[in-house]
Image (tube, rainbow, N blue to C red):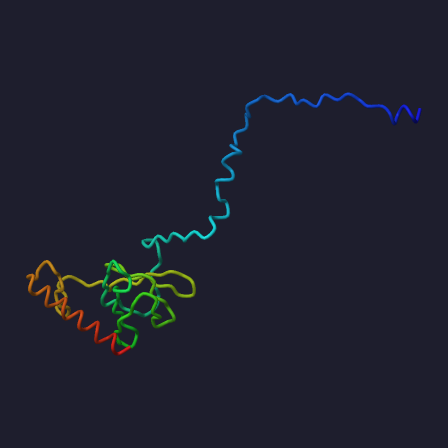
Length: 160
């Protein structure tokens, strides 16, 4: 009996009785392409319009954009009413770092959190503020103003 038990080989039908096409609602081929944990070495996408406004006591006085980031700059006033020119990557008062410069705002980061600094809102007809609208100036006045701004920026850079 022991010998017959050891020599016994049952015949098992291993063929599965499954249809050739899967009826599953999940496409198992696409799972590998989903990137559940992100893509390695991918740059983060930051939506600038959704960033919170900074709580630092800073005032944006000028923003100079350029295609080459090394030529861009911003004039920012601190809480002591001291204005200074900053380039991208410079540290601002309050340990914030200037990340990018746009027409109407600058983006900065503080403690790893991105924030925006906008121009101060001015009321129309404010007689204490000069009219800097380029539309109301002649080409000669615009060029003269640009020259004065460049000169001011160069002077601020020299003070650094």
